[in-house]
Length: 118
Image (cartoon, rainbow, N blue to C red; front, top):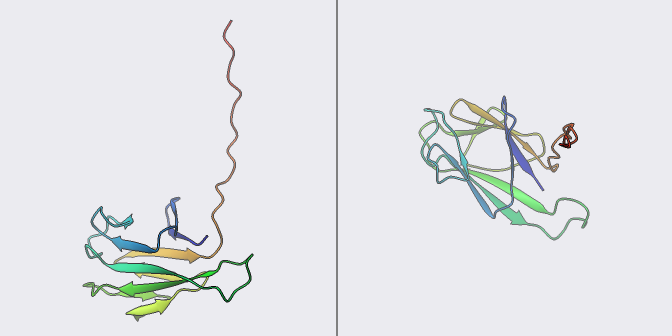
């Protein structure tokens, strides 16, 4: 499953829904606290694609600018609609987001054994 990661933050967002809204208000799936981001800035649509092998990610991901004030950029170029590729860098406002086709696996944290009380 593809993911988005806001560069400079630890949070990863799996793209599980058919549409993922990106913007400044909190009813977006990805809400960004950046005054240069429009309330409803961009939309990622997940398009199922049955022509690929089963083991591979079988979706296409299309990002669309929602007539935002400051535009949506992919790899430094302003886009109105763009098919995302692994490793693309999306910029909305001053926020950069990395798109990855690889599923994010959280690093294992060491967990101390529970102390038994007498």
